[in-house]
Length: 378
Image (cartoon, rainbow, N blue to C red; front, side, top):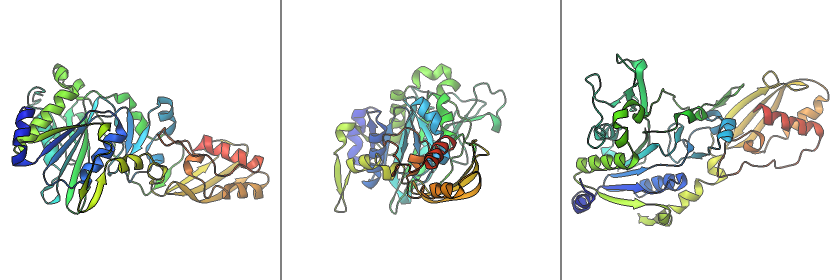
């Protein structure tokens, strides 16, 4: 269906497809949230891609999810989105989709199946395999394919190409997800925290699965599995499903877009700013407990410390065990951790929000030694 026909049928259906023409993840995630707050009366589909970044869910603990040091080496930043769900890697080879509908017509499988159906249509035209559709939906509402080298289909041969998350309000809902076209899967290790000690957190843990790019599994269709073609086939299928849809293009020039909803102004710029604030990026991390000791990271003295962090700030710090000199001084140094931002104490992944500095300078050599050791150990 052409764009002209979609626009012509807009009056009848009211459905809309929004294409982002920027790779700016802060704009795209802010616009994604803005569309939900508009409470659209008709279905809306939002399609975008981002520059390389790791996106964590609103209810996730970034220190429990991410390999901070690996992300620092790779110079891949992280962003906290407004919706729930697990941690995902984004880059230009990964397409992101969002569907907005009224809550009373929302079903988790509806638009996952729409994506799977769309990719069977020209120009992508993914062929059936093993007498089954090329892309299928599992019980978690993920889209999966069989590994390229599969001879006999099995659970072990399944590879995830799309995962989803959802946000549901009193009257509206949205479903968003990723679609791996030709992403740098070598960066997936950034999502797995590497640490010698456990973190106990109230945050939502990600569920990992083996993944694959569609271009790798369907090499003969790779030329048509490019973002613009996939955007178009999803747009056409969405338009067919809802009896026509208009198409809108957005980028950073829409940062100051706003609308009144029930007398309250909703805009893009406020969410754009929130996504880049310390309170949201670090301060939204759920409570966590860390037990760190010299058994894992050696020091000249033997000690074990239990730290509690709430909203990114140390609320408790206790010396559990200690074998060394001047115990009173080390107890004092540990207690002074309370009130410090955890991103000043522990390595943090790159972010547009720079990691914090210590609130107070070290007052003794023992205190400085403890800080240095924690920086290495955490």
